[in-house]
Length: 212
Image 1 (cartoon, rainbow, N blue to C red):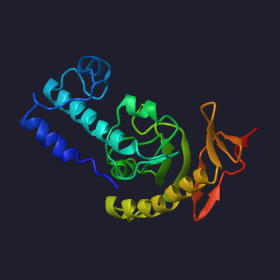
Image 2: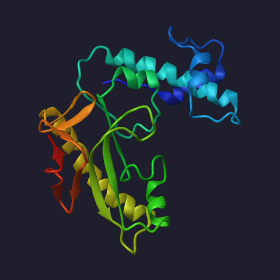
Image 3: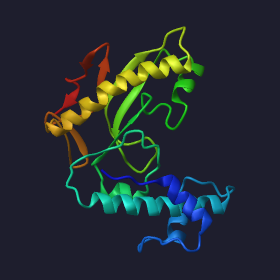
């Protein structure tokens, strides 16, 4: 069990920005030039604080993780944007869940967006993580009908119920060897998965929508 306290790292850096020890391989100029999270109009101090404290936090996380052997890293309520270096290091081993039917509604406030756009359905997606926000190959999606009486809170609660079903399901499939990567393709039961599996009304669908 280990904890990487992002809040403490940020507070310590803001108190003593010039005395904060950085990872040996951290190159602020190079990372700043490549980053796409901040626009040119945003504060450079804000960007630097984010990039530096993220690097410190990830270095601590990697150090703690080095004592363990694992096949899958499960992000649950992480709510942090990982660096390209971290994602590349664990390519095809990082899995996440997002409260929308991806590729719709990446980012925050997904339930509100679904209601404002008068969608008929909403849901959640389990996906492997790549370098874009809430992107990467989707393994399974839960479909949740939107009711006329729904509010953001009631819809979020029903979506969360389905998240608690499909996330353990995807993890179990991985542990059982039913879901795996081969040549950057997702295989399900040793066949290429061309569309996400679908969990709807308590049943798993689309298991035949694969190609040899």
